[in-house]
Figure 1 (cartoon, rainbow, N blue to C red):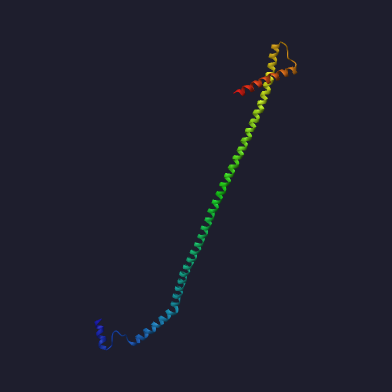
Figure 2 (spheres, rainbow, N blue to C red; figure 1 turned 45 degrees about the vertical axis):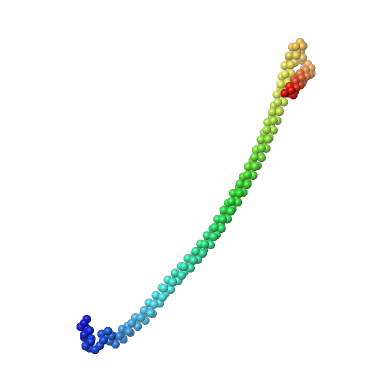
Amino acid sequence: MSQLLTIAASEGENPLIPPIPELVIGLIAFVIVFGFLAKKLLPNINKVLEERREAIEGGIEKAEAAQTEAQSVLEQYKAQLAEARHEAARLRQEAQEQGATLIAEMRAEGQRQREEIIAAGHAQIQADRKAAASALRQDVGQLATQLAGKLVGESLEDHARQSRVIDRFLDELDDKATKAEATR
């Protein structure tokens, strides 16, 4: 390298400055390459950069729109959920009221049926008591007639006489029973 500098210094030229024809050819080649790049490559680069910018901006806009839509859907769901909870509480309250009403109705119906059963039982007891008293009257009457016939020594076969004796005997028994209950 030092030899080259010594040769260039001996010729009187500056080694750092190229010769003018090379400089002109280099400048023309640079303009041609720069022009080709500016005509062919720069529009494609600008087009790709513009598409990328639009995609990014569009993505941001889409994301913002999606976020806005998601927020509105969330608010709708929250409103629907609150409404559903309110409706469920109302239905639960109605069911409780209907249940209480139904229980009260069933209690009243049970009370009514109980009263009917008790009344029917009392009526049946009264009917059974009357039937038993009637059967007892007949049996006691027959026994009393037979006993009276044996005591008197004559037959009390006359039906009218028999009925009078039986009725008188039973009336005396009823009077004694009534007096006994009254003294208690």
